[in-house]
Image (cartoon, rainbow, N blue to C red; front, top):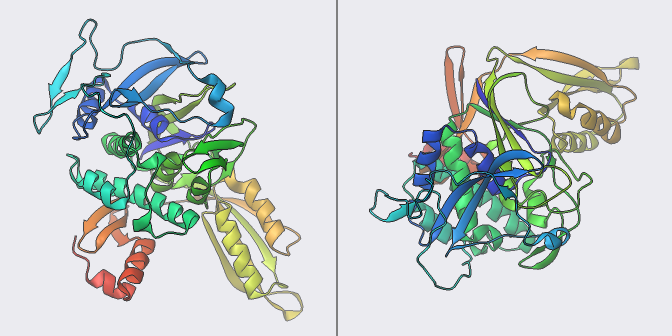
Amino acid sequence: MRTLYLDLGMGIAGDMFSAALFDLLRGDQKREFLKKINCLGLDDVQVRAETVSSSGINGVRMHVLVHGEEEISRDLHDRQETGRREERQTEPEGHQPGDKDHLAECSHGDPCSLGLAHSSCAQDHGHAHHGMKEIRHIVAGFDVSAEVKGNILSIYHEIAKAESTVHGMSVEEIHFHEVGSLDAIVDVTSACLLVEMLAVDRIAASPVRVGYGYVRAAHGLLPVPAPATALLLRGLPVYAGHIEGELCTPTGAAIIRHFVRDFGTMPAMRLSEIGYGIGGKKFTSLNAVRAFLGETDQSGDHICELTCNLDDMTPERLGFAVDRLYAAGAAEVYTVPAAMKKSRPGSVLVVLCQEGQRQALVKGIFKYTTTLGIRESIRRRYILDRRIETVDTDQGTIRKKIASGYGVSRAKYEYDDLARIAREKSCSIEEVIAGIKE
């Protein structure tokens, strides 16, 4: 199974995710990506990839220039770093020495830079803020596959849901600030395009370091992680760490929420490529997302099983415990009816998790249940290859879960998307499914 594993020990941002995946591509693929991303049709927006050195490690920085300028967001801790940049080691990808006007024609005939910082516009440098309606209109004009378009809109829909919850507004009323600017749209599009180009079967990641402190945003000073970012990280394993600053951005959180299905330690894999996506901020540790590409054993893997017996909890308290254990990173939680001592009715609580989440879930079981002891076993399991595709239907964008292997193949639509459409149309989920036309 072709697997991508992300080391998020220094957090995640949209440009760092894209840079790490770009670093995994072959030379011809890198040129192909830069040509595609620079031919999206966004006026006066240019993307270039630069090989830089940070903490003595070579990696890639992605630069998005709008009207010839690059917008860089900084939190309070990082303001003193203004003007500090990584030492350049090579020319940008696609650039030949002495070739300062290296242009290519895109499919619609407009000149597009192959990764060079080039702009012929001297207009206002301010970035417009867009809502979901504008985002959909912009993405509709991109010359990319339907799957890439669907992934872009799904990521923005997740961001819009988080923002709508934070600000008490409907999704359609939300107007993005930082994540609605043109450079953020390019970051999300780059991420989706690179995932398609790498053609991976599975994406896994480490727990996410989010940092601490405050960040300056459009609405003033916000605690780290910012409120919308925190909502996007619900259910995912996160920690603050000892570095002050915003290590996880809303765009980065939305990208991993959409693409990453497994969190924990790196699985056993035969490595083929390693990529480094270097961030723009300077910290005491290497500020990078590391991406590992390789093959994992398709025949099966291992999962940790934690069990305990419960005979003195009400159904309501047990239900609450199940919800909290899912939030702590459990892959599966279920109960089995059982007869306990003195013929008391009870339940066996079973929690399945990756080994990296074991300690957090052991603490969670003790915290949210009345058990005095937990049994642990490592189980070998056989699993189907799983992936999620986003499809455009007459009822809107819907994610589809596809599983295959061992001679079988099956697919079903994502429940959350079906439920959202059912609520919007005031109908049943069965009626939504019956009416879907891809």
